[in-house]
Image (tube, helix red, strand yellow):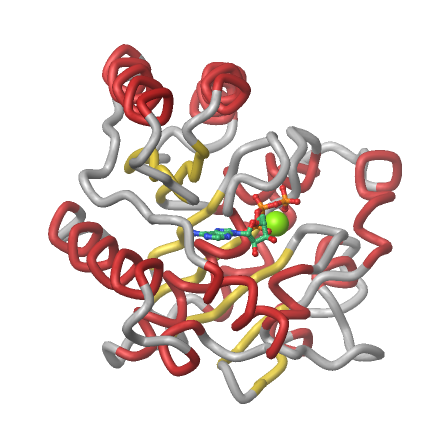
Length: 254
Ligand SMILES: Nc1ncnc2c1ncn2[C@@H]1O[C@H](COP(=O)(O)OP(=O)(O)OP(=O)(O)O)[C@@H](O)[C@H]1O
Ligand SMILES: [Mg+2]
């Protein structure tokens, strides 16, 4: 099972949207996908219409239940949903080995799925560290703005620490520009800066960029996958292109 963590500590850069679109697209191609939501906001869980009152990622991280028991089958696929209780994780999960909780929990189910997609909160605490430690690879969704660029550099120092202490095999597959509007010169300039930042950090900017499109918000409000709600919309086409690019770039990865 490949475990893809979607991370950036800046808020609203398209993490949950990317986690959802990537996972749904992989499912459409016949891959077995498990979604994991470790963001206390629970946006991915809500988009996938996960049921409340069932075991969550919080219960898994605090070892109250197993990943298998916390996995829900929704109409859109299998998910270990989030809980608002996750917001206490930094204070509650403090024992030695705390970084490995999610990795260990996913190990017993690693043959049940081809891909696990983990959505993370806009923070660099225990939850994101757990997701990076469990991951085989990371995708960093950014918007073409200055704060995102600062965010990438900060995230990189966390990733370097995770690689050094917890997960030496972690691959940073690349940076994905989302909510892109190529009509502005500023966006184009910032995309160039993100490209060179990526290179300096030893990763790359994906060729595909995800354009802005109202269909994203509409599909999320209706709790429908983007591809069935608005298959011809720009973001739907862009995410499909991104998945092709991603699978091609990571061919042979395990
Ligand atoms: N390509 C797009 N076009 C238009 N709107 C988008 C696009 N991508 C994301 N959005 C919208 O932008 C907002 C932020 O996106 P999203 O929730 O995916 O970001 P996030 O990084 O997960 O945020 P957070 O850091 O709060 O978890 C959402 O309202 C979403 O609907
Ligand atoms: Mg989110």
